[in-house]
Length: 197
Image (tube, rainbow, N blue to C red; front, side, top):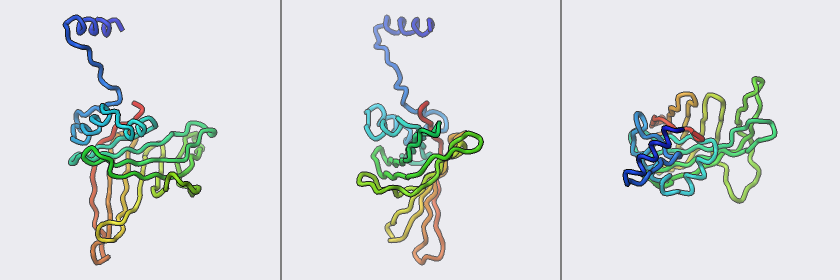
C-alpha cells in the first residue's frame, strides 16, 4: 500500500493530474488487441447503459478477431437452491452500436457434485421480453443460440460457445443454400473477458 501512495504522491507533485484506469475496461493487449475490444472500452468510458447493465451480472464479453463485433452474454450464476434467476441475455454490438438482443429462459438445477447447471425451460407469458434464445451454462461452458430469417427468406441458426477456463469462443452461422440442399457455414473465433473481474 505504501508504494502505491508514494507513486500517487509523486505523480501529483509533478503537476500532472493523476488518472486512474476504469476497472471495467477490458485488457485489449495480446489476443484481445482488436478493434472490437477498443469499441467495447469506448462504450464503457462513455457509460453506455446497455453495456454497463450487462456487465453488472456474471458476464462474458467476447471479441471477434477480424471485425469490430463483440457479444455480451449475461446471467446471474446460481450459488444456492434459494437463488434462481431464470434469464440469460445476449447482446451483439457491431461497429460500436447494438445490433441484436435476445433472451433465454430457464432454470438453474443443482447437480450431485454441488454445482449448478442452467437448463432451458418453458417461459411464462411476458409483455416485456420475448424469449427467442436458448442457453446452457455449466461449470465448463456457456452456450447461447437462436434462429432468424435471413435475406434469402431462409432460416439461419446462430450459436456461440464459450470455454470458461480459457475464455476462448467460437461463433457459428449455418443456413441452407438457395436450393435447400446443403448448409453453408461461417464461423468466427476470438477471446473473451469475464465479469466480474
